[in-house]
Every structure is written in C-alpha cells, then in structure tokens.
Image 1 (cartoon, helix red, strand yellow):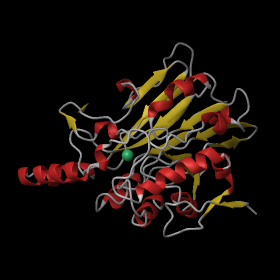
Image 2 (tube, rainbow, N blue to C red):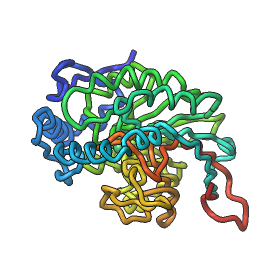
Image 3 (cartoon, rainbow, N blue to C red):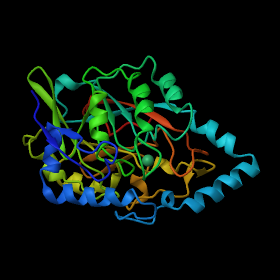
Length: 340
Ligand SMILES: [Fe+2]
C-alpha cells in the first residue's frame, strides 16, 4: 500500500489536510521547497499578493484584462478570438535519438500543455473531439490546468476529468505543475489517474529496457524546480525525457544529459501578429526556446503552444494545439528533430 504524507498547504483552504501520494515526497521532503511553495501559494489567496518570480505578470493585472476584453468586445473581435481558442490543431512530430533504447522505437507521447480547462466554455468538449481516435503510449501534461492564478481551484477539476476521460495512453498519464497550479491539485489529479511528478522521475519499462520521465515543479514563477533531485533515482546513461512547465531550464537540462525536454507556458504568444509572430512570450528564456522545436547542445526540446488560454480566453494567429510526438532511433546521416 502506498505511503502518503500530509501537506496542509495554505492554498488548500477548502481541502486542508489533503494528502500527497508517496512519489511527491522527494520535493516536499526538501523542507525549503515545501515552505517556499506554501508561502507563495498563501499569497495567492489574497488578490495582489503575488510573491513568486516575475511578480509583474499580465494575468495579475485585472484592470488590463478588463480593458482588453472591452476593446475586443466593442470591436467585435471577442467572439472570433474565442472561436479561434476552441479550434485546436493536432501537431505530429518525430524526434530522433542515437541513444534511444531499441524497444522504444516508435514510442508515442501525447503532449498536452497549458490546458487552463476552466477558462472557456466548451474547451473540454473541443479538446475531446480532437483527442478522439488518438492512441499514444504515454500522455504527458506540462502544467497550468486552470485559468486563474489565484483563489479556489475547484472549477477546474470537472473540466479536467472530461478531458482525461478522452485520453488513450497505454502507460497512463504523467503530469507536473505550472505557475497557475496550487499543490492541492496533486491529490485531485492523482484521483483522476495522473501520476504527478514533483521533482521526481518515473521509469517506463519495455522488456529489459527502459526510459525515464523526469518531472520538475514550476521553474518560471514558483522557482521550486529541483532537477538534480528529480534525477536522483535515474541511472547513469539512461534515456531521459524532462517535463518542465517552461523552457527556462534549457541550460541545466543540457548540463544534466536530458535527451528530450517537453514544456509549454508561453502559449506560443497566444495573441500573435499575422504569420504567428508572438507579441509577448512571458519567459526569461531566449525567444528561440519559446515556441516549437529547439535544440541546445545535446538536448532536443519542444515548447507547446498549449490547449488553453490565460489573461483572456482568446487566440489570434496562434491556434491551440495537441501534440503527438514519436520517438525514433537516429539513422546514420540524419538530423535531429524533424519539423512537422
Ligand atoms: Fe499557461
């Protein structure tokens, strides 16, 4: 029977005394991170009290949201932006690796990011329509399950339940938290069958071979990421897929031998100029890491445009996406990740 540890987080006002399952203890066993996240989350229960990294976020400025919404409404663009936000695309990608274990040739990872499931009516249903018929080996969620950044998380769980019910993945669903997520979500996500990795790693075996899925807490805002801690159980030379909410750990990932880095957070701009040119990306990583395929040293990475929205439930020139990634063995003379 799994051992559980208590995490009476300040954010869990409605579910105080909630428990985290056993494999979250590597983060929360590190007292500094547990206290740090608790302190930041407690400030989120008071409007305007944000205390994480990059505290001046557009989503924190309600006046800006109200003004932008009014402008879009008056100009007749709000409905169009909402329709765009429900019109997700399936993006299929192949990444090639010289060190991929042979048993994992063709392994398919369904990558869902920035779902913000309670941000727009009909989002769960539209996402399910896009997921229908997709068969993956593993589904990974790279954080930001709700729309708001403060207050109760209750509204997001029924919507996440609808989306997860449409996911088909042989090895199940693995997730991490983003900057919109409180630690109380871990319990709820796990009840829905998501294995949440908080600075921890999970081995996936096929026969005598395996790959490791490594997940860190949000590096962008909470700053509670602990990649060395996450990698502690991973054997030397193992094939490693890192899940992080944002691309900001690209240098550390390269230093620590990550093979594939999957993330989101930027929404690829969400509201872009014609041609998909982002206006705001909200990351300290260089622009080349903020959307799509990238590479840094040995690490191949993908920053998803995400499924949902933040700030306003609209998208322009930047469709939401569901990503299906296939792992391939690199053949002699071929390049890295193949563009779509
Ligand atoms: Fe997000």
